[in-house]
View 1 (cartoon, rainbow, N blue to C red):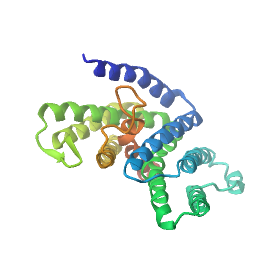
View 2 (cartoon, helix red, strand yellow):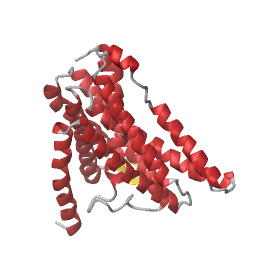
View 3 (tube, rainbow, N blue to C red):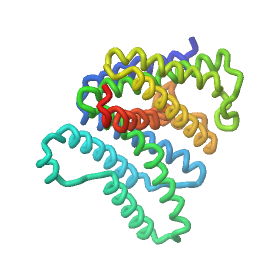
View 4 (cartoon, rainbow, N blue to C red):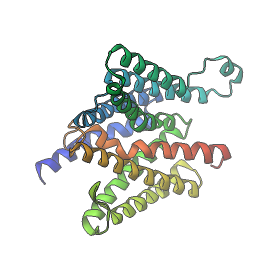
Length: 289
């Protein structure tokens, strides 16, 4: 085993039990704190790659907005858990994502005007700052909503994490072993359609295994795995395109042997909201357990 592979395995051996423990037994507020830290680390890596292309973000203000988005998701989860207290809920202040995003836009407008530079020069900074929130933080914050779904939350979050991990591993081994048909050679030359199919199949197997534990109808478990796998692979491809544009192999070096934080959560960024919205729009609305 090479030193790089050994370091990769050691990092995974340390982090995986911590992530699983937090997902299964940690309170939702702790998950929200972890999500905020991870999201801001990934956001800063996103901005570092943007800087290589000449786009310089408003880092501090955008990180504050990222923390606000995660806090709002925690607030929404808590509100949903006390929905039966209708009168109390009706009197409580409404804190929604639109309010957080409005505050972000207001802030970048003030920063841009206060800098006294031509608006044409400030627009790239505004654009990349907003892109970081939209493409990284906002979808990734769905992890908090997943965990906050009453008794199903922790198990659904673990299901989402495992389908991403298993799918990525299956895609890697099958793609390197028998992969021939390139999926997107200009963006990610190592990704193949065979690997993508293995990712999808691996996610379906995870759905079968978790279905007995979560006790959601098998057809819905399979559907959540399917949308999660497809969305996760799209997230992976998008991050690969961003890295290729910036001319870097990894988004960062924060995780020994694994690259950057954005490298580790690229698939989860879109897989988490895909699973969350399927559960909310299809299962929760129809009470199909």
